[in-house]
Image (cartoon, rainbow, N blue to C red; front, side):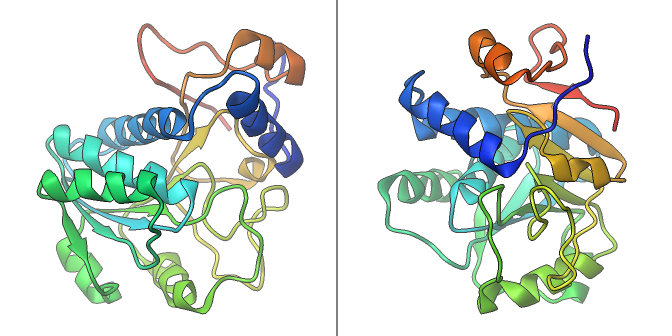
Length: 232
C-alpha cells in the first residue's frame, strides 16, 4: 500500500461535505460511528481505567464525545461529562438525554486538577475538531490549561483540541499532549507531530470511491473492527 495521506483542513471539510451531500449520510449517522470508534479505542487501550471524564465542546466533536460516553457506559466504564456550552439543536439535546437516561453524571463545574486526579482515571478531550479556528473562547481557556497539565492519560477525538489542523500545537493556546488520539475519516496533517502512545483510525465509513478520489490509501480494518491501529 502507498503511504497513507494526511488531510489538510480544506480536504477534511470537502470530504465531510461529500459524505453529507453526495453520499447522503446524516450527521447523526457519522457521529454514532465516530463515537463508537472512539469508545472502542479507549476501551481497548485502557481496559482497567474505568472512571472517565469526558470534556464536551459545542460542535460535532462534542457530539462524538457524547456518543462515546454512552458506549463507554455500555462497555462497563463509569463516564462523567463536562458540557459547558450546550446547544438547543435536537441532535445534541437527544444525545444529552440519552446519556442522562443511562445514568451518566453531568458535571456542572469543571473540576480542579487535584479533583480530576482523584476522581478520574482517564480524561477524554472532545472539545474542538478540525473546524476549530482561534482564538479560544474565554470559558474554554482554563479547561485547556488544566488538560495541558494533567498527569493522567488524555485521549483526544480526531485531533488534540486547540491544535492547528496542519501546523499542530499553537504557541498562543495551551498545548495538549494526549496519550491516545482517535483520528476520524483519515488522519489530519497535524498528526505527523503527534508523539503519544496510541494512534487509531476510526469510523470505517469512507466509501471506496471517495477514498480513490482523494487518494487516501487508508489501512485495512481487521475483521469486523471499527478501528485500526496506526504507526506514526
